[in-house]
Image (tube, rainbow, N blue to C red):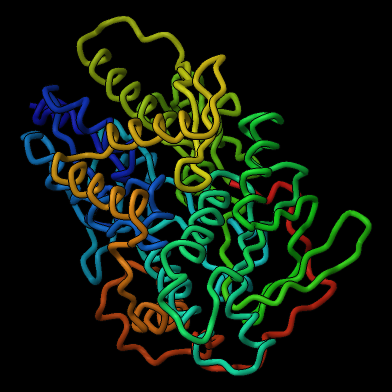
Length: 482
């Protein structure tokens, strides 16, 4: 009997985000063997990461274990591993988990490896301006934000105290607007009676974007309305400003005339851009597929790679018809790819080309304030906020997560509390050590025993020498937004 007939059709899925998860769930009853490989153990609900960063939710509520979600998928095996290579000719996927190397063969491959934060070529910004794409990012930002108020309480020098009480957010997309709004809520509502030496209501929050509007994807009218709401919350909105330097004491921006301004801030948050997984480059090198400017690989109308109908690329790392990098696209493409595999096995006609059905988009600004696009309808204010609550509860996976999330929202939005205000200095120290070793956040713990290389020290309490920022360094691309 040939090898082809000796086994069921093997489907390998890379990534347990929305695309990978929806593909696996769609294949639950199919006559296939599914292997899902992911570098972490959880499925991350990224749209709510900013609420982990600002103390509303715990990480467990937005990151359930992938194994638990797929427990009823009897045909699915979940493997921990960082995929380091895809051999298109041999049809194998190589992944590493510590010292363990796993080579997994496939007949069909669904690549849903997602995206990471893009600093537009300015990787020296990384130690001073964390992004918000992972649990580690959110917990680091929570530590930075909450301990900034603690050090402001200890500081007697007014200029330095002002630095601690200034928060700069880069990027006027949904993530940046939501972060700025929640920091304002934190300072003006949650913390305002908790300190004796500082007035947290005087906290300065600056939102910077290189475009001429915030929430540009929502249209000019809603973007302008969001900017007004941010202004009412005390958020300074700086538009048409490019970030040209970031260090441990703030950041430097440049307007269209070339005038540069330094914003003294001990906490800088990067929500300005994303880039596709490096696996897109691996596939492009072997298949000849094109890449776009966002390091995303261009796919056919059926989400496959040119000349390779067995390889589907979905979600944030693919480029097709300028579809946005949002959860809904990944969900629909994951289901589409799974259906295509099943139809081919059943010798049915191929599906029509993938078409993204836009169910709308929404972003919160603060408590009781949001904006939403639903088809031709545009909402803002309280109605949009209620819609946002309903949609996000609906897409949270697991009854327990929905209940606890609703309870924490009640505490935060109706009351003044934040259920998750615990911080750990190890979160900051540990991430700096990881960066010093040049390791990914999810590296094997045994690798941390290697001698650390010199790296910038970013301490919330110390006063290290500011990192030099060359005035001639490459400028970020204009589209500094999510």
